[in-house]
Length: 132
Image (tube, rainbow, N blue to C red; front, side, top):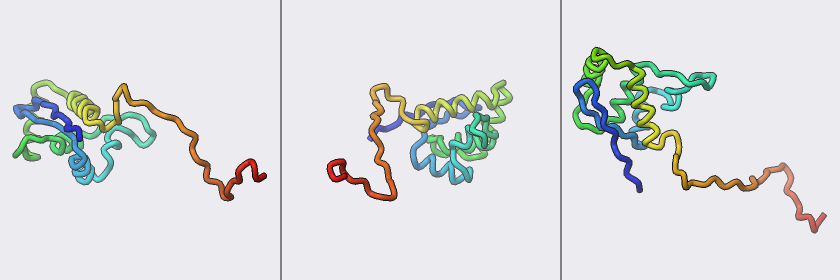
């Protein structure tokens, strides 16, 4: 089992330790009421910036620092925004987090994709050539 490291994020006076585990993803999706992939993609498949409330839900769900409430996250966002940061800055943190957590798939350069002939499921079984 590979343990994923946390990503530290200074956010409006809070230090968040962000990590996405399988349980975190399920909890975040339950809270959002939709897939986390839908945060980044519109109905036509193009990329989109998710609503800020959803970004903050993901931050809260990925945060591994004990005792940080929704209210703490909201107050930290206010400070972060007033300090001149934008929602796009947080979006960048989330995309980095998703990538580091393997959410978008493996980036292992040693991983090889092997292409094999896929079995074809016909309605009738095929016979070996020698029997035809």
